[in-house]
Amino acid sequence: MKPFDYVRPATVSEAVVAAARPGAAYLAAGTNLLDLMKGNISRPDRLVDVTHLDGLDAIETLPDGSLRIGALVSNADLAHDPAFAKTYPAVAEALLSGASAQLRNAATVGGNLLQRTRCAYFYDTASRCNKREAGSGCDAREGESRGHAVLGWSDSCIATHPSDFCVPLVALDAVVEIEGRGGRREIALDELHRLPGNSPERESALEPGDLVVAVRLPPAARGFAAHARYLKVRDRTSYAFAVVSAAAALRIENGKVAEARIALGGVAAKPWRARAAEDVLRGVAPTADAFQEAAWRALTDAKPSGDNAFKIELARRIVVRALRLAAAGTPARLPALPASPFASTSGAIHA
Image (cartoon, rainbow, N blue to C red; front, top):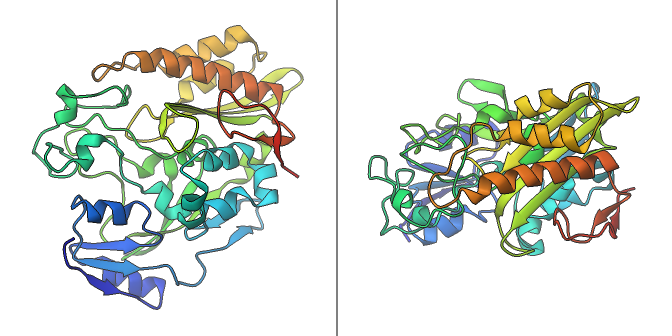
């Protein structure tokens, strides 16, 4: 491992100054970063430890009804918070479908948002990867591409974003609070991650020194609690990233869909909000035909990036199934196998 400096700032503002220097990286739980460093994929000159900073580990309801989640809240603490799981069930289900219990105990909300792709060519320093080394090429384009993107990809990169957590957050219009050299600012989570284009090495809208301090769910997100699900298809039921996933949230009034939210995971370099599919459902009855039409609209622009055409049809089917489960109503118990298509509704009680 490359030698590096270790800095432990006392405040958020000190952390921003320390991390703004070239070659610096933030360290929280390190569940992704430390693996990358040990494999010589990430080689920071300086680690800025933010794990002890005050005010980043709270879950709080704000006066306007929005929920603010500190960047250092662990995935496990958030998912197992009874009030959170009851109000945002699809987000809790997504969190509990990711990684192992041990990793969820350590991993943080902020780190989950910014985890790097799990593309095998990115992790293999003997392979060409434009994310790892700009302009070097993309061996995935002519390699094993089964798990790669079908939306928003380019010739420079076909990798996917691996987060489960981000998918329902994007569907629910989550906002990210960022502390930077210019002070505090906010950005929609849907705009945080960048599509690859010709510069896949730039993965997010963050600037040097920017620190994610919190994620906020708006008051309107509460209105989907009764009809919200997250569904994830993976190669094995646990400890695996999504081949395809979908978050579906509905607000049903008088037998019709007053509002719909749909997002997909495992299909692009960012969590993919399917707004055209949402428009299809607005004002219509929640029927099988309507869900089929919405699923078709969600994948209208999809195209294979290699040997992965199956993912397009799989994504359509998972959208339909997530919508059907959401329309049936959020179960009183979180499934024992969260987000699994094979799950029964027996599991942890929401309330």
